[in-house]
Length: 276
Image 1 (tube, rainbow, N blue to C red):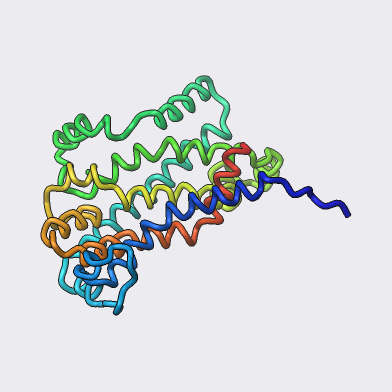
Image 2 (spheres, rainbow, N blue to C red):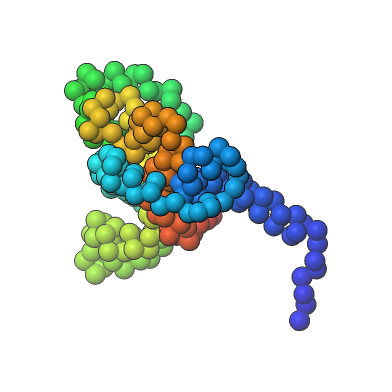
């Protein structure tokens, strides 16, 4: 049995991967652990460990702040965005993948160009349009633009999956009396689960962490999401560094857990999109 030769490329690759992972994970760990310290401890030794471990910061955030209301707003916006992205993205990608019509590739190129359009460049005209439609200070003011900006990457990921499904399956389903919508619901969606999970997680995490758009369109404090809550808490308790770290870690925890649990599905979905 032949063995693969050991080269310097593998250790270097692993070292670079570990370095990137450390740079990515270290700030998250620092924020979470910092929430278990007191502000004097952080000032005295910014890189130290809690001694002793203090739970009061997290307890105070969960009981004496607007955390739960802001978490509810974030959940409504993120779930609404994710569901609409999945529904519209699957519909558009299915047509672009399984139907043949004039201008199909041009339409797909149009969606692809959306990846090159930065959301920040559209903030001012977007705000003016939402204001004219009387949508500001509502969940829809955040959900609808986020859906629009998430659709390009959703269609780019989903289309290869839907295209790769054999035509023979569709022909067999048609012989059994299944229409195109039935084929989409019963066969296409189950086979495209990795891609659906991928675009769903990407849309959810992006919506949960969105800051600029909610900041501009949600002037009502009762509608603020958690990223805005972090800003409000930081402004209110400027000197309470430990409390700010605790609030920040709790705000990012749901998206972090959601992304972690769906990691394998995300990798499979992106690999399928690249192969397609």
